[in-house]
Image (tube, rainbow, N blue to C red; front, side, top):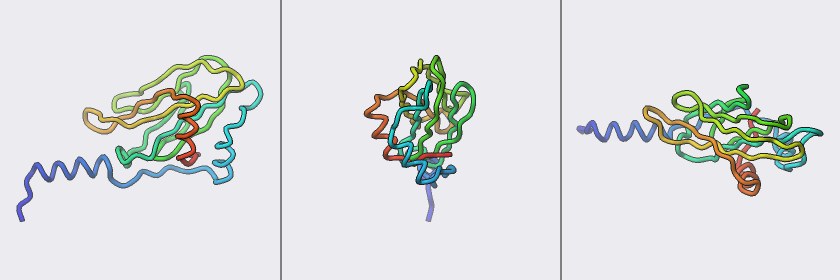
Length: 149
């Protein structure tokens, strides 16, 4: 059977973008359940939730997340991170195809902030972006995910 180059390239592209799911270390079920209560952060701190939906697009890719230039871990599909930060200006960032995509926000003590990391097409490989989402949308997104370590 002769397979055309076009069919072979298409199959390779699909496998790259939707292939085996990337796996990352997960927190315990107890920690995941506690974070999903969305309680108030520690005294004089703000909560930060960053989640990545369980999408087939980019499923084989992991992307590093950072807060204020410090890596907090790698995401895979269907995972989230929950961290606390001091009040003030902060930057959340995701590894992209070339460098990082980042977003600044001002945190207030006692509040939780929600961000979605999303996968997107890159020039040569899958890339990622990050966006702030409403508390309602953020909670819904986090509830569909598992907490990463």
